[in-house]
Image (cartoon, rainbow, N blue to C red):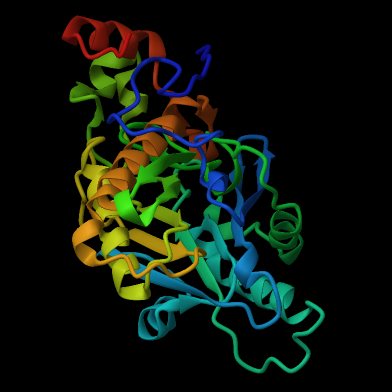
Length: 347
């Protein structure tokens, strides 16, 4: 099946009315870099690593305020309890496949310990998230090595984030179609508190009915091969939110909560087997923004999550995977026709 990917915004299907940043990805937030390693090996392996590297934690002794919201805890989020207890992160965040998360955590520890200035470090809390890419990849082989993780970390940059079947989203499945990595951003007006940027990166691997601007898109109607379009329920979603508003960890937990809420806008069914996690961190200077003024941030993060999820699917490609499984990309022509009939285009 041929597939020419395009971002939701380019198609006139971006959710919400907020203004994106220059690249409309998480790197629009100052001080945030992203690195990815993608692994394809025939039909056996489709997996990889995505590293989110905030500058503030990529230095000796670096820490940032952070918050975590667990929509459903069916997952293996390494470092979760200390993140909640102390309200901070002290390492970059790495995403990968489920059974490779533990090797990735060890590699992340090596990366931080090896940095000049960290010779005296004796305790460290690596943060590693995962989703299960075993439908399309030989997950039991645990193919991610230290070299893969170090490459993703060391090559992280502020270039626009590559999306679709890349990095930790190489073998994922979402909403009945091929999932992947997605990213989006919003520039937020905080009135007398100035402005800030909210950036989101998603690793999509969850079930439900794809919903584009309120229009449901099901594999049964969109694909000619409905039998191959069937996907397991659940399997999780990781949401990483970066902000430069100067929020504290309690406020960031509230922001992370809204990120998970954003999944509902694009059709998540929040199945019992879906580990839905959001981590929000902030590298901005403290401004003393009261909770009563956080609505623009809450609205922006939900919009950005919805757009990032759509982009993760719209930029993915049909993938022939492990054990004869195939997962088709969303047929954008069908999506455009159905949305046009519903009158939901921006243009």
